[in-house]
Image (tube, rainbow, N blue to C red; front, side):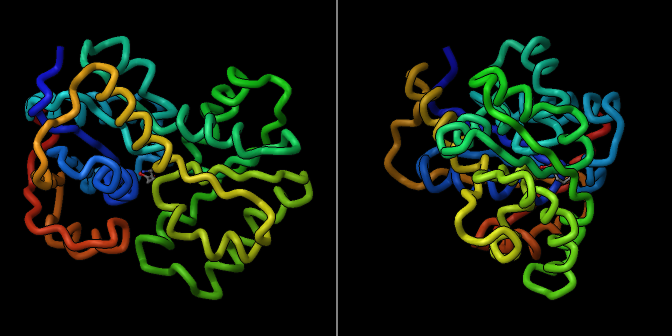
Length: 270
Ligand code: DGL
């Protein structure tokens, strides 16, 4: 049985996973958390399956060394491509963001048409479509890779006209399919909600996998009697594979809060 006083481990290709961390902090404030952002090797989105698996394994090894009680692969690309393999390889519980997002979308749709947007890696893996099909095979899924969204968010282009035009180009084709629900299948996309709303209007449900993922983490810890019993706020540690100052500076956009100390590690050692 995992030690309830141990931290929750979260890994991501970089900053985006902080949108998942934020939900976990809100729902489970007294849990200690170790976050690893692989900023030195980000983005994962356009990389090959082999590389994403190798990086995800190293990220996992680092978190295991921190003696975490559970691991969350916050990165949609890593979850899409490496989760199954990680779950087979390690005995520690490793959760991803795809299934929780798929569950939320299936609950939200009224007309059985769901759109998915994500990185090239996530969309080509078909992970969301497969997860939705496993829940309800009658649902139709329409997917679209949006590779420019990650750099736009990282450059702080959240509400610029240029971002709207690019969003229109990517997302408008989904409008013609009649989807009533859209999965924001990438850690960065929740920050583009206002722009995506402007393109799709307010009748389409926008699903953020992070919210449902935090509930799944909570349920899992509850079921395994691994919730941290302490009442004070948990300790939060942040590690990165390059330039901690830049991570600390940009973290606020994703987390809605400042991060105090960020430590750099050599992830290639893992
Ligand atoms: N974290 C990635 C994801 O959710 C986006 C950034 C990247 O491509 O590494 O897919």
